[in-house]
Structure formats: C-alpha cells, structure tokens
Image 1: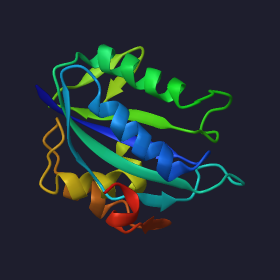
Image 2 (image 1 turned 30 degrees about the vertical axis):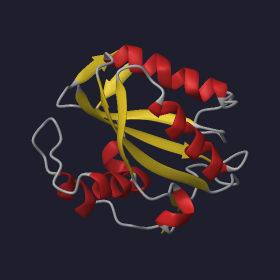
Image 3 (image 1 turned 120 degrees about the vertical axis):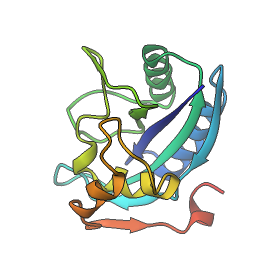
Image 4 (image 1 turned 180 degrees about the vertical axis):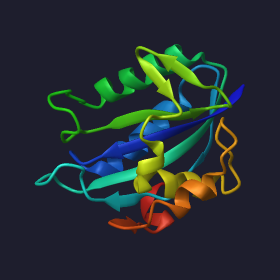
Length: 164
C-alpha cells in the first residue's frame, strides 16, 4: 500500500455532489482505502468566463499500480459525465494523481508529481490540510511551495458543507 494524493475538481452539474460521488467511487476501488479528504474549496477557473470550481484533495492508501489507478480515475470521470472538449475547459469531474508515494513517474500518460502542483493554490492548500509536514519526492517541504503560492482566489468551504 502506498499513500497517494488525488486532486479533485468540478465546475459543472452540482460540483459539490460530483466531489462527494467521486470520494464514494474512490472508496470502491480494489485494494484502496480513502484515508482522508480535505475540506472543499472554491476557486476561479483558469480560463475566464467559466463557473468557479469546487476543489478538494483525497488521500488514498492503495495497492494499485500507477497506470491502473490512472485508468480507474478516468473511468470515474467518464461515469460522472466528463467530456474532454477543451484543455482546462469546464468539467463535471477532474481527478489528478498529485503524488504517488515517493515515486517520480515520467510516462507518456502520467507525470508525478503533478507537473503544475507547485502553481496551484487550489491543490496545495487542501493537500496541506491532509499532510502539513509532507515532503515531495525531491525532498522539498510542502511548506516551501505554500510560501510561494498565496491563498488568493480561494474560498474554503466549511467542512460540514463539503464532505461530512
């Protein structure tokens, strides 16, 4: 079993419900336990004119291999109506592998740590809720990334309103 962190986001079709459903689906994956889920956050879209996103991070303990997990996540996205029409476009659900244990993965379909992890406040702050003393596979503390990525454009939703 490895500790894996999954970034979750939605800005279509009842985003909070989409994230709740995603957590339930993650819990059904073989060899996988949901070890924790951050509070939900709202953030502005990376592209103008889109609805705000609801984001969170889930911690999994899983025996799945990286590409098995990626395939399972894409299956969950598809089951929840994900359509891949434009890069960074609106979506019912986006599930990204942020970290996979201490692994550095560089495959055509999967880059871990997530290639834009250090730039995304909507990922870093929920991740810090789950693992405040986390060190990335390169040894860099998560706190260093937080120090260079301000909490701007984010709104933390009350945990009772998000996933409890």
